[in-house]
Length: 77
View 1 (cartoon, rainbow, N blue to C red):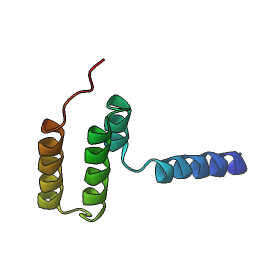
View 2 (view 1 turned 30 degrees about the vertical axis):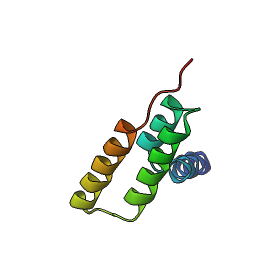
View 3 (view 1 turned 45 degrees about the horizontal axis):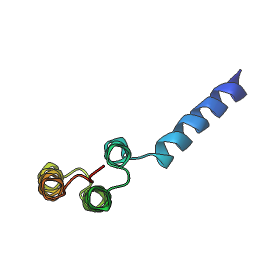
View 4 (view 1 turned 180 degrees about the horizontal axis):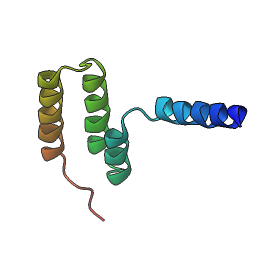
């Protein structure tokens, strides 16, 4: 039983370490195929990666991402 619990805990930690920023991945999935939106999402990931727990820094990153995405035009079908 202890081994099973340790295995599950290890699996959960591995999953969390693999996908640290779910919101950025969602943005990439929603705007897949448009390089502008993908660039905005990557820039946002890079920005938030340096913020740590600084709420002001995170707000600035979010604002910059929204401005970037506002400048992107959807791809014509």
